[in-house]
Image (tube, rainbow, N blue to C red; front, side, top):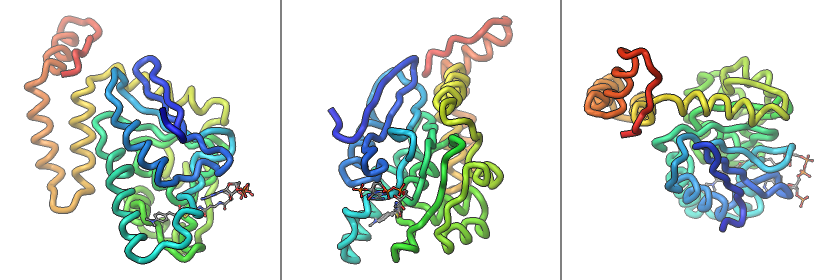
Amino acid sequence: MYNNLIFENRDHILYITINRPKQLNALNKETISELNSCLQTEGNHRVIILTGSGEKAFVAGADIKEFADFSVEEGKKLALDGQIKLFNTIENLHIPVIAAVNGFALGGGLELALASHIRIASDNAMLGLPEVSLGVIPGYGGTQRLAHMVGRGKANEMIFTAKMISAKEALEWGLVNHVVPQEELLAKAESIAKQIIKNSGVAIEAAINAVNANYKDGVDGFNKEIEEFGKCFGTNDFKEGTDAFLNKRKPIFPGK
Ligand code: DAK
């Protein structure tokens, strides 16, 4: 069904693997477009785990061969299309996306991980934004999201030097939440996913909207939180969650 992706829905988790191992899973236009549709696949999944094929790379960046001869206008258009189709889509998805970073996460690859809600890395992962070494800047949200995540000083250093950092450094910088041996990476992502799945999906969607509001121009995050908080009281999940607590039983959330 897809040329560059493998996907599987198991136990309410949608696993999406970017599958261009010969190009270290570099993101070409087709892969971005396939990811856009795969991420929005309807189904009973409650969490998405996004990873790269093979043991070497999560995603080694945008496909350099594809943009090597771009004009100014083409560059702008690709950045805009990509940001809307993939990176903003992930960030604003109604369910959490966990990036399981299994090796190089460079340029567009790190930007993909940054747009995800949670990042876990294998101990061999190397992360960086090497764009200035190619004469461009990060164009898929990296200048914004990296600074939000690790602070402006560290983001500047990473972008200006184009140097990669190790998984261990990324953990120290708060760029990834956990670092585990490569063979345990998916299991770690799954254990977080399973923990998420126990909770109310509608409340998690509301939480995504409220947390993201802090990073949107002209939006008051506190007001958004109040609005989303209030909306929760009208949901069946809230009725079930509170009833289960009061009756000392485990909730079975209807998801609406
Ligand atoms: N694009 C295309 N092919 C890539 C690639 C990439 N980003 N990264 C690796 N490959 C390919 C290599 O060309 C090689 O292919 P063959 O020569 O075998 O055909 C194969 O993957 C294996 O790579 P290496 O032989 O280089 O493997 P090594 O272990 O020696 O090195 C490496 C691994 C990850 C250090 C190295 O491959 C590397 O430096 N890769 C490039 C990293 C990089 O600079 N990535 C791009 C970052 S810039 C834009 C928006 C966003 C962006 C650009 C434009 N617009 C809106 C226009 C974003 C740009 C970026 O992501």
